Image (tube, rainbow, N blue to C red; front, top):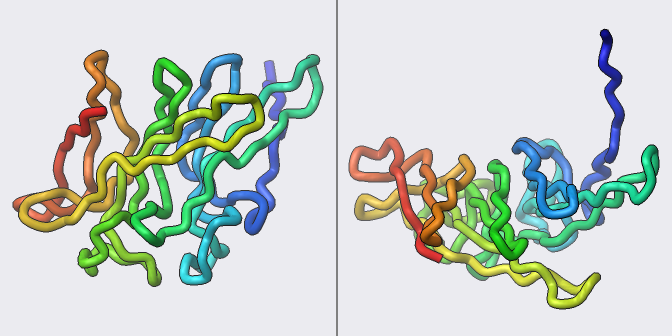
Length: 192
């Protein structure tokens, strides 16, 4: 039997939407889909630009329709800037915590701007682990917090591109694609 594909959202790119989604989707409470885009979003400075478009990326959610065959509703819940310690260019799927919070990594950005080998375009920094806390009231803003900024120096990893594995004890485990003592990556743990 042939399966039928249905488009539930078409990205439009900056300034009001993301583009270039590379990671798998994560299903959250109520069937809401969460994901990241590699470029786009409205919070991006002009230096965030790849040949495919500009913008430092976004985190989005898609809410399922209330009736079968209805329209899915997309919301951009965070726009990256790549400046002032913020991350840029996530390539990984998100994980959803027990209270609906979202965690993942960004390949670039973060507070360690001395990490010049890890720059992309004009975005400095070797990547971040970050979390997003859902709003206290329906329709409110999500709160973003950088949990760790990678330096790529003194044996630390840099440029995480894979997702995170949460533990039952509140630790997020992941991999960095570069850095480390041998310069070819690390495994890391970030305690929440």
